[in-house]
Length: 269
Image (cartoon, rainbow, N blue to C red; front, side, top):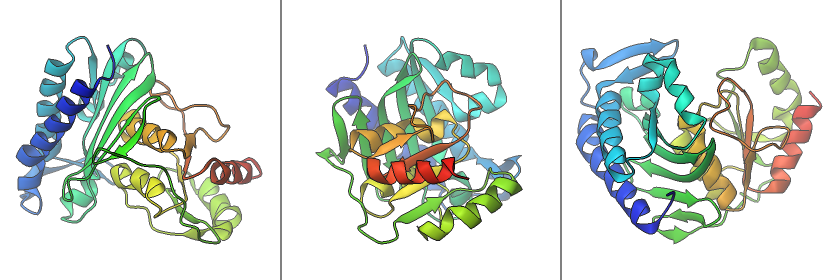
């Protein structure tokens, strides 16, 4: 079993319910002890852990045969990543954009993906504040709030790029600055994949580069862009897989032509 309309509706309802219970009430209401440093420039809040628990419990009821990989569970126990390699697997980012959320500013959201044998087959991207829901199913298209959507470019020259250099080393960051950025109108990244991927489909941004490509950040978004008619893949053009733990580099663009142009520039670095 993979995606069905009934499953889609059940997951969508679960995400909204969990966001209303575990995330929205805590927005701008966090106490100091509700926020914990997880790594350099990365935090986790009580909203993350509460939402992940509720989502994991709900998804297990919806599709009991699927394994579950949650961001916080994998951080505590890296062996959880092994669940991504075979069979059905839920992938949970309970609160994407946690740093924004903890600072009391948007954007932030919930990302859920369903994968089979390492390939994402369905994804849900939920904006907690606006309640916008972006969904995609492998071979069935992309949708925003239930309506089909096709990726549109900004139409600007040069194209609009949001490039994440946070996880690049200094040498690569400097190469990007000198050889890539001059070809684009560069805008700030939202530090939230749940916002960045919709921007590529909705005509806000044209292309993005990501260095770190953990499955909970990218599985749903890559599928959403591809099903909308854009292109998201590894820089060499190979498909993104959720079981490629540790592999870096990902380009997402609102059209295949914009993807190809960025990929060529990266090859020339």
